[in-house]
Amino acid sequence: MFVFESKLGESDAAAALLENSLGFLISSIIFWLQDTKQEEIKDVIKELMICLEQNNTAEHNNMTLDVLPSNSTFSIPPSVPEKPVDLTFKPQINNVLSTAKLGCKLDLDFIVRNTWNCEYNPKVNELQIQHFQSAPTAANTYRVTCFLGGRGGVLFIAVFQTFPAITIRIRKPRSTARLFRNGTLVCAGATSIDESHRAARKFARIVQKLNFPVRLLNFQIKNIVSCGRFFPVHLADVRQAYSKKCSYHPELFPSLFFRGLPGVTATVSPNGTIILNGPRTTEELHKASEAISMILSPFRKQ
Image (tube, rainbow, N blue to C red):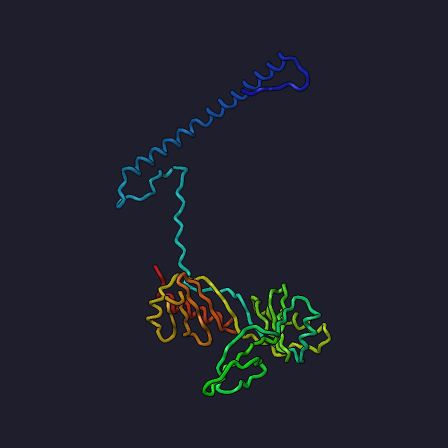
């Protein structure tokens, strides 16, 4: 029942009359809709009853599921064909390692004092105890601190390994660089070759602003690391088929190392994750991904 509240100050009789009029109008509209739709509802019920009877009496070997009458307004949607399984491996580049020459020697102490986001730890990184038949000759990489003792001509020398390079980081593109005193630049962290080249130019510009005669020379891509998800693989069968080209020791490490591709190492996990390490161009990466797809396809888990 609809309730009408008068807001204009009419009398109660006028409000009751208006309420009865609205109720009569709504009931007449509902009755008219029922009369007009009654025949269509009956037809739909008949068609549904026919479909149920035919489906109950049909045999699975001789009858099909298309049991609706020809004049029916209903239609069964066509069956969607299953998508074919994609057996190609499509890796995504995660890291690009590149090197370049800046064309001049660098003062690392001056650079680290005048540049943001720099790290320079020329002191002790790691303590190592090494055995030498004679005194070490690589004085530039190891700093001898003390002699611990000697017996039978063998010297026990404590040496401290140092890392004489500056670590610089930028955000766009997100990458990290190592700068050495001889002007060598090692850039890592980019996700494409163009980003790696752009990052190397930015690092060179950072050093150039400190009044060093910097020129970006001999830019090279050394390694492209990519990763992707493949189908699960029987790693034990792969090791048995390619025993000379792969190594698999599940008691030590759950993944398989496949070295059958020239210059590329593939790390295959049991769940199908593959890491490609070694290609230097995108063409080599695509060729390696196609080759590893063909090699691992026969060993797919069903």
